Length: 336
Image 1 (tube, rainbow, N blue to C red):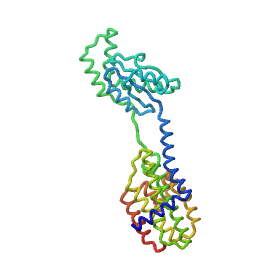
Image 2 (image 1 turned 180 degrees about the vertical axis):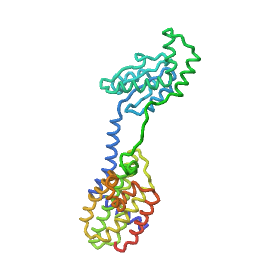
Image 3 (image 1 turned 90 degrees about the vertical axis):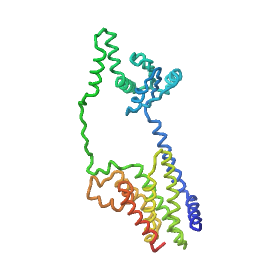
Image 4 (image 1 turned 30 degrees about the vertical axis):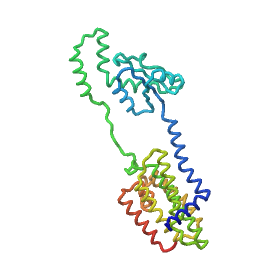
């Protein structure tokens, strides 16, 4: 209980520091702003009202990989109203018998700001033709008095669909010599940078206390600030609707706590700590986000001294070993 009380006291003191409080607010606020901007750039919204049973077609439409967001309506009038007020870019009404479809019957209208009408129609009609193309073609033949054997026609049509070959071949290639680049997650890189800044902020409190003759708060000061930053990071993950890797995140905090304890053992000037923040931030951007060592192999050795790089790229077993070793070194560091 004594240790918890000490931790809470250090956390309260950190929260009273304007720069710490501002950063703790800015982290989730930035995440909120990002999600708001992303929501505003989802692309066009398109409505669908189904008079019949076109569930398979609608499912295929929703799977389309484009900048269109499709919404299925229960009310035709409500959908028409949303088109008129331009909440929807455009809308489609599927007739009871989808085989009777035509552009005039399906397309309801376009918003005056529409720039994606062609893409919208292509997405919808490709899904319709995929599911109902054979029936539509046969109905067209009947209406134009083209003599076809219905049973033979559908047998041949299904065989064609099952055996059609793609005329386009895709080849995979790596754009960089280091395949780890594909596994880089910018969000993880940013979280790692924030955690480093949190640990160094705690180290500043340690050195400040030491100058006042207070030498028993070292580990608590660092841990208190890092817990506050970790809380802000988790809130940001929630806002971003991301699931954090809690184990890796905890290991990162343990490792950085140990490093900051060691730094405090050798440093008596908080100005050096403040100088280290932008330097380590720049190093994390260059070696973690850009991964410059993939392009300049001679700089690869730097990766081995950046715990942020271990957090972003290394397997959990090796990363855990490094973090635990650093944590233990921090515990047994002789000078507080």
